[in-house]
Length: 266
Image (cartoon, rainbow, N blue to C red):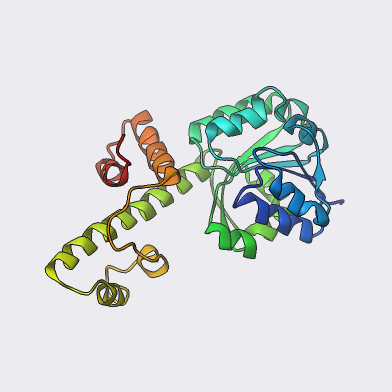
């Protein structure tokens, strides 16, 4: 069988190296500018095909991957004016790789199914280094056979983990991020405590990372000398976790505390 044509929308810090890997692996990749021309121009020597709008990308794509900032941007490139969903052929697959609401993905899947289009929610973990090196964890939610159809392309990007039905990939990613960010907040707080006592913080981290309190966060990220406020991405992801908790009437006080501990002052 011929390889599928990949539509790829969202050539940001994660998306650009992911698209580059697909191109290097010999996939035909079609895209359109979302926010900036810089990435698509850097990928031009690798023979990425540029089209004017997501709608035009959809006309060519067998698998359409989107990895834009948030749910609003995802919805715009798929269902907005000039969006891709309206031009995808029956049998195409939409792969939502941004971190968005599980319920949004389920609603999108229902709408797409009426057009004969399948939806997978497949957020990724592994940071920009993982996107460059092809070592991402792809957290896939959807029908197993549909995920398998995307397997050759997914294998270029990393390791696919099937989480369950549509929405389960987002639930996994939201949970993962909440735990990682909560750990970051806790380590910052405890460093302040032991620093106030007079312990050298480098020595604290050295001992922590061979003790039971160690974590991926403590072992892999340099800690600032004092607590910092969250940039936009952690605020988005922790807020999304709380939105999901409220939607299903689940208490999540530690997630809220993590968000409040680093939320910038209004």
